[in-house]
Amino acid sequence: MRGAADDANIRSMIVAVLLPRFSLLVALAGERQELLGKPVALAPELGRAQYIGETSPAAEVHGVRAGMRLGEAMARCPKLALVPPDPAGAAEAWERVLAALESIGAAVEPGAPGAVCFDASGLLGLHGGIEGVLSAVRRALERPARLAAAPSRFAALAAAARTRARKPIVVQGPLGARADRERGRSAAVARHFLAPLPVDLLGLDERVAALAEPLERLGIRTLDELAKLPRAKVADRFGATGITAWELARGEGDAPLPRQPMQRLRERLDLPESSMGPALERALALLVDRLLARRERRGRTIRAAVLEATLVEGGTWRERVVFREALADPARMRLVLIPRLAGLPAPAEALALVVERFGPAAADQPSLLEDSVAVRRARLREAVRQARVAAGPEAALRVLAVEPGSRVPERRAVLTPFS
Image (cartoon, rainbow, N blue to C red; front, side):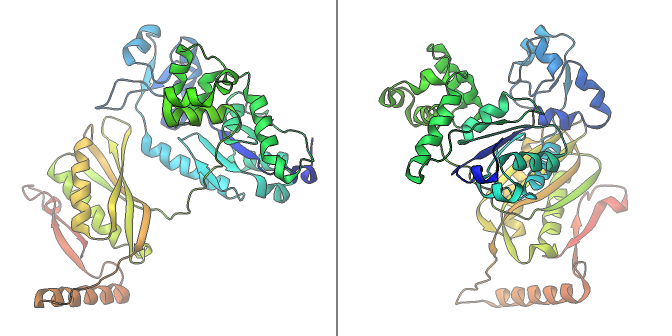
């Protein structure tokens, strides 16, 4: 085992963390936990192509794999149980995992839920070497995970995919290399490790995952066979994606790109009964008003938001929306978000709106030729702001019609923050 002094000679060491079947485990949480030992898979999302999601080990014994058509999966395993996917719950659980890794000082680059990488070079002295970093990751996660460390990101992911939860792999080369040769030495170490591995490991990188099957059809079985191909021929056949795959097979590749720190705001509304159509649109308008009235927003605009819904039939629905420009206008936000509700596959019993990324502070720049209406609106906004500062966010409210035709008075209208 090498210590911190030896690890200091390594210019780059990437740590990969894999949590297999992450989305399936989230969907099986609670009362469905007993199904994990049986053939079970994530059901296809409602309204989309009939391909199953992640599968349990018992289902894989019958030849059922993620991405397989539902009919073929049921033909191979008639006892296969289908569980509604929970993308909203998986995203929330994945955010907790990333926060746990960031708590040890890791600048993480998240991939799909269940896969994350970070550069551990700056943490070697803090945790006592690469073994100390891996131990800190295990303590922070508090759950079984496949860990590996290698000079390149793809080599680390490939090593993590082939290891077990309690036996991390550390891919290291000879020490004492000079600084100008260290980059080439690290790539050589990664290439030596990747050489005998199957080419289908390219599926671990979303950029080149689609090339695994075409390469196998061409008779290329290992990453070493791909690395030995002439670069020009790979580029001629597969373009820029092929060049990326060729570089990954040779132990090269870019370093992980850490995600930017962000603050999330979330507003949730439980619907009195399964809602669709106009009632759901009014509920979304209420969430927009509440979100913009939150004190934590501090006048900032919103760049990206996420719509989440809990479905009556089980499972959740999630839709990410990136605005063309950062905005804080409730009317424009409703104009963008309401059409996304058409993709809701079933009636919802709860609706949530989450701010994923903030923009700069909203700049109120009036035109040179202001009319009296614009002046009155500006004064009214200032009066509302001062009232909220003095008496809280509920000092100025307006009436929003929810179900005008309802016989129950409490359902006809609700109070929402004035904007």
